[in-house]
Length: 268
Image (cartoon, rainbow, N blue to C red; front, top):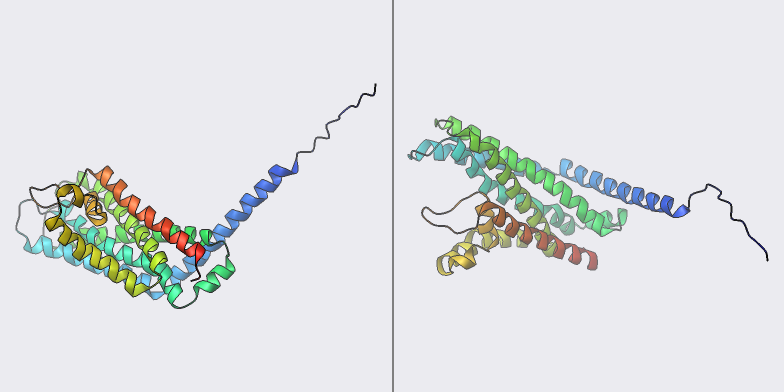
């Protein structure tokens, strides 16, 4: 009988090293895609224009309410959050433009040539859109606070301000992601933006007149407004904030996943 002795060489298998290299490679590709999207955001004019409009509209709206609405509960703490509604619109538009401008100007081909993994490109666009929408949300709220203060109202209950900032910023971020998903699906700026605005400002308003409350509360932007606790006096058209956030986030994530599938299967 022959006995074979197996000696340990102390050398680790190559598989873990290969896995680590693949992970580093994916991270490097994502970092490269993020740098590319950041350069686009920093060099294109539309993000700066949208940021300026967010500040101007949010500050003006808060100033007008503080100056001309004569009600006992009008103060900085209650008024500055009104800017979040306009900010969410601008965030959705910016999310749409993140992809549609490339598709319309046929520069998406170069983007996908530089990074063939389209999922990584969409992931990078999602992260940049999220960060930019958060900046829009915070800028709009700051402008709203300044506008309300210039309107001559008192500070009010400042303990509610941190919660308002958190919910309003979350609303802007989800609106931006929803816009990105719609842009990936439509691939045309005018069609996507007009569709979102018509649905947001016209269709949901009409449906709310005729449809029962149990239906209206599941509509996307009524759920989004529920994150800000914007309801008609004496009415309840949304669930509590956490549940409205889940509803609106489901729309945003659904649009993004559909947009990812469309982008992966079709040419820009």
